[in-house]
Length: 364
Image 1 (tube, one colour):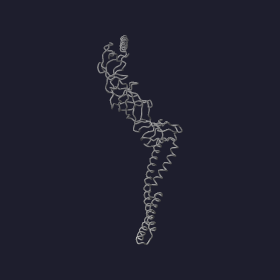
Image 2 (cartoon, rainbow, N blue to C red):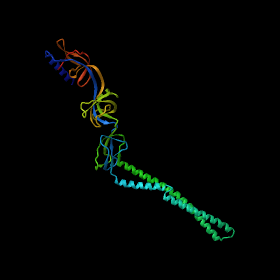
Image 3 (cartoon, rainbow, N blue to C red):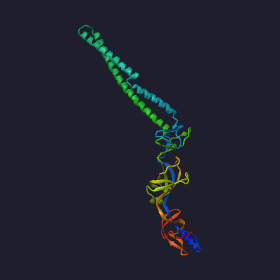
Image 4 (cartoon, helix red, strand yellow):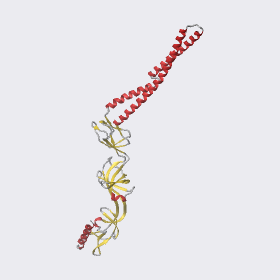
């Protein structure tokens, strides 16, 4: 390639020398910027894909593409009729267990009333047995009467204790039933949550991808969400330019969607791994200007500004010959002169030494 450039330079010089009055131009003093080219696409800050966690038919969709959504807002519902009936049954079971644990519940009141009756019987039989014992000591009642009173007393005593024990057992059982019903209800509510797809942030619904009536499989992408706080440019640069970039550098972006507009950005993140497939490195830039519309996925072209000079002496890049020389017209003669180039762009090159504003550069 170097030999070809040298040959072209020699051919160009020979052609110029054969011309008696060559056409010339002078170097310009202007602002020139050195930049690293990058390309990629635009995405919202914190952009994510919302995926289905279960399968079924899409029943409803809420929200409008391009509009704001709130954290926790239901965006889609997926069919779960069998789950709905199970959830309703579990809710009834939980409500019943919760009501049963209340001391004023009919079941508890009935058991407490039974204890009161057993206690009253126990106290009555206790007094009767005490009187029969005193009368028996006085030989005023027979042995059979005494033993009958004693048996009634012991029976009512056991009945009273048994009713108390049954109440405690029932309370423990109701507590267990309540906890079991609560776990069943929570489990079904968790399953139901998979059928109600909610936004996990305050942001923008950029795109909903599923339609009502469509069968949804677990893992299907339903929507694209992103923050409303701004955008980043997901860009790639050639690995040869890695050493030129650093965080905080100014970036100029252009998008086909907005022709003629240049957007300001800042280099915000430099990734650590070069993609072996294309030998490119990903960088993220934070867009500082606002977009005319809420959009994501737009193609980007970018220039990461490495350095800028406001009063540089520049010439068209095509006039710089191999070996860093140019052809000038001086003192009525065509001459080849050595120069020291500085900042280079695709169309221009800065000249640090070897030329002045008055130099007459010969056009090819």
